[in-house]
Amino acid sequence: MPLPVLPGVNKAPVDRIPVTLLTGFLGGGKTTLLNHWVHQPEMAGVAVLINEFGEIGIDHHLVDTVNDQMLLLESGCLCCSISGDLVAALKTLFARSARREIAPITRVVIETTGLADPVPVLYTLMEDPFVRARYVCDAVVTVISATHGLTQLRDFTEARRQVVMADRLLLSKCDQATTPELERLENELRTFNPHATQVRVRHGIADPGVLTGAGIYGKTDRPLSLGSWFGIEEEAGAVGEGRYLKHARAPRQRGVPVLHTQRVSSFVVTFEQAVPWYGFSVVMGQILRQHAAGLLRVKGLLRLQGEPRPQVIQCVQDLAYPPVHLTAWPTDSPFEDGRGRLVFIVRELEQAHIDAIRTALAHLPGDRAALRASATDWTLPTRCWLSRRVSVTAPDAVGHDAWVIQPRRFRAANSPNSRV
Ligand SMILES: Nc1nc2c(ncn2[C@@H]2O[C@H](COP(=O)(O)OP(=O)(O)OP(=O)(O)O)[C@@H](O)[C@H]2O)c(=O)[nH]1
Image (cartoon, rainbow, N blue to C red; front, side):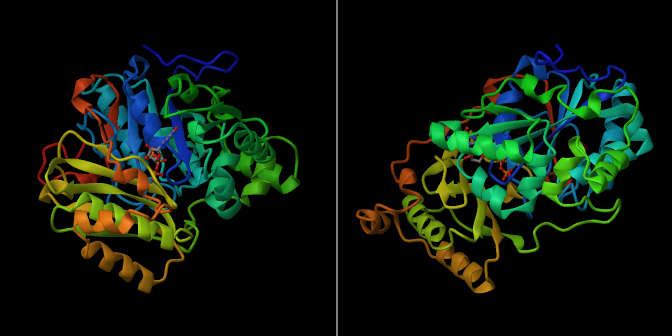
């Protein structure tokens, strides 16, 4: 069943495969939305490419029931290091579909890293002759957090570029914001991008129709030249979509990689043994509180003492999200060794602080001592973890036909499916 098209928006051209770029700043809620969408019948035939920043990836473990017969993206950020890999992935996808080795593809959704600039990804889609003739960018959908969106817009060029380039803005986490907060964010977003439709989202539940047919990219049946769209209007300061780029700063020259906000980096903490949950929660709370300004995102999978199921850890800046269990420990790299790992994405965090975080996590107190120590600590950001009401995702319970294409590094090298 094709994806529904929202009233009043154009359908994508039928002769090329529509591509939706799903972007949005770190921790905004992209994976949560995808996890909802892949269960929808309208997503049959939709291929999903996930791209992550950091040494190891977590997101693909959090998207339910993946058909991982395809495995196309290298590690690294799509917008600066692996655009060639994206082209190769799209070519292979098309060829396999044409040879009927896989079911016909009705759409491709590319989830970019939270730090990705959409412009070079759009360049990639529109400038390669093979890709351009077979795929069309149908929409740029940007997820922006109702809780952190305003500060991210203020602090990060990447966040502004993602908003400026959007055809649709999905305001996530609306359940956590008040009406005045939401209205302030909506007004701010309008100053950056007055033409993008804004959609309020709670708990990642949004009609998959928001992925379709939104953009100027799909309104014509001939391949578009991004060069003119991005360049001329901006230089002239003319009205039209090009003016948005004044907010986002000038686009880079084609082929010249631009690094993310220089001060952003990532590191991984690996746990040799199962961890005590309360001991971990208290130490992690202290870390979040102490380094609130420097921590952009923490996510990972942990093995807990006395608990066979992996625990998903999710923090955005100093906010800790309710814990979730996966039903089974992943069997693919790097988690097949059974060790828990946390990915930290940080900004301007000195090496001494990184070392202190590593040391604190390597010396977790036991549960009893941790609970005693935290009993009167009402400002601990991880307080919600201490009550430990953990929901379980049940990936195997639901069937669907969307594909999630995982970065190659997550597969065993000798797997028969590790290449397409
Ligand atoms: N309460 C609430 N939590 C949400 C909502 N959307 C996402 N979250 C939580 O926010 C955290 C981060 O969400 P993700 O979907 O992983 O965010 P992401 O954009 O994929 O993150 P990156 O891939 O790191 O950029 C998770 O703990 C989600 O459960 C929402 O609408 N409401």
